Image (cartoon, rainbow, N blue to C red; front, side, top):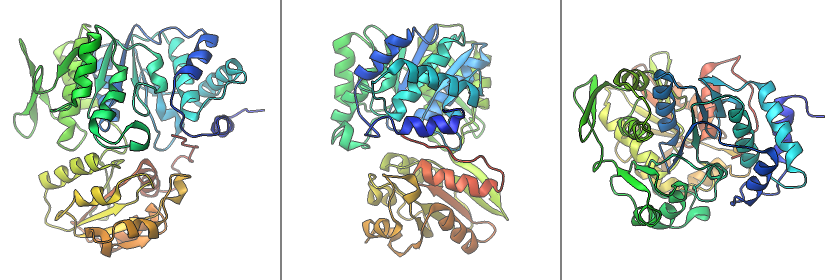
Length: 431
């Protein structure tokens, strides 16, 4: 018998021999048995290499400020599985998630589902019963064959396209873009957050009649001063407060979210946009902590594009003290390219192993070997991210800063350590 959420999470991890298996056939079959209809009056699906979670946070916050009842499905979680399913700003409770998993398990029969497919169907089951005005679905991997693509989006968003998950999506931006463009629907808006989107994305939009709305062409953003920025399109200009989410890239993510909501053609007062931008929060995105005068920032960035954005933030926020970097990568990431993005910006590197992340984990000695010849080759090494962070904090002095990044696993371990005793127990993460 499976009575608790932990029981269910352990169960669903064992229901498919592979952590990832692309394709929609299985989820379509089980969704039909569950009689799942549309999860909300309006649906926005968000794909892309980086920035998905932040864009979802802006979408959710603005829509709720506008008075909409909103459901958001994201992945992976940082500290607790309930983070993945939010209804009207509240994380789904353990009892509700267990009930949803039980419904999916009963409907699937002998059909094997991956951890992510199980979770997606459970979220859609909960959303369908919540009377939502808007459902926001974050793509797990790629787009065309991702379980979230079961639902037809009224507006599709592709935040960025860059190299990541090449084993599944292809070896270059054109191939990866073609997979991500699969979330677009005929004659519906497709919002693009890349200054230079791959031709494959634009070709697909043209072929199906999707209306591509491009940042820098159809809508624009620019800082005004230290506290304000401006979003504009033809016939509309909005002066807005700076987001609480740090890093220059968050203006782009907020701009994309505004364009997506305006493309829905719903009632969206300017006051709701301003309030939603200011109120949006998301753990693990340059999340700040203070330890004895040492500023610690925890980020889930894990690929070269994300590293370049973190490096841009370091350049934009110089300090008098030293900058320490704690890096713990998964085995399938281009660690050398990640480290190269920080050339000249980091005074001391600390590497951590990620064996606690499961099959994708990487022993710290192997990570150090991959970084031979890089700036981090003289780094101190520790068995896990928390131990590496402890070493960095011991070496840091007041006025220094420590950036912890490399994966959701690294961000989770660092967050638990920084929060101290009493932080929530971990849940199986799956993918």
